[in-house]
Length: 144
Image 1 (tube, rainbow, N blue to C red):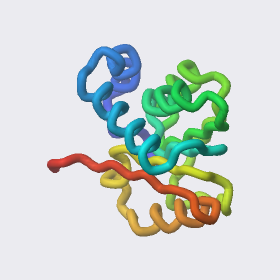
Image 2 (image 1 turned 45 degrees about the vertical axis):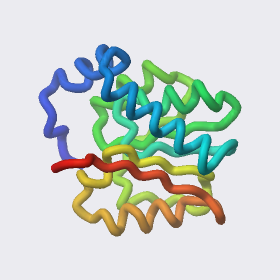
Image 3 (image 1 turned 30 degrees about the vertical axis):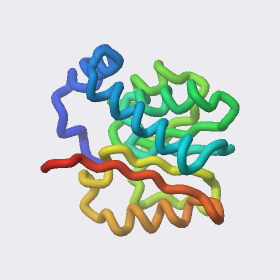
Image 4 (image 1 turned 60 degrees about the vertical axis):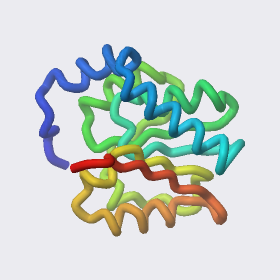
């Protein structure tokens, strides 16, 4: 795995400010709306590309009885995710190399897929990791 292309202070900066920024809060509102509208209750959720754990924390707050996992390519981000959610299992992993099989009810990739060179492999790995009738939620930016 490569080193983060982001400046060393990026994840600390986001960790301290995400909750105060309208875009991050609004995105969480849309994600929670989609989960409530199209999925409802679930048992196990993986957020791939969980960054600092901001989205995962919002989902966990709304659905506290589920089990949560976070997957992130950059260790710098995982350090903050573990501080934010000490009871969640976090893994540093390249999603295109994930070997999970029928393990998750829901997998979320929020503004992540566009950063993955082999996006087809990433989606295939997610499909493999979902339970039958599981749900994959993907968000991507509106513009480049």
